[in-house]
Length: 83
Image 1 (tube, rainbow, N blue to C red):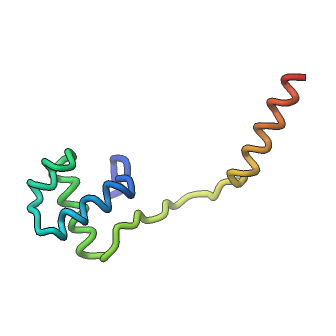
Image 2 (cartoon, rainbow, N blue to C red; image 1 turned 90 degrees about the vertical axis):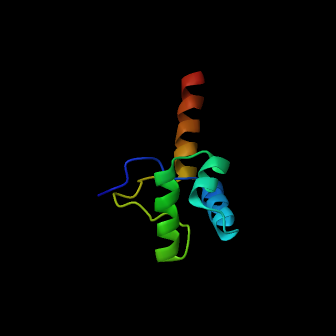
């Protein structure tokens, strides 16, 4: 089943692992960071099984334009509308 919520930021991922490695309990991590106990538990389980904190890439069609191409086309559209 796919995840239903948003991904944790890299900052939160690293913070959870740092506190976990300091031998703090899951309840203490929840109080310090302020996220749900289930999220902390799932994340620690994922870290123990995979050994890293990286989020997996999503499946789906790749974007047609790169970020740079998209910015250029938006900028060109704004210039033409101003003329």
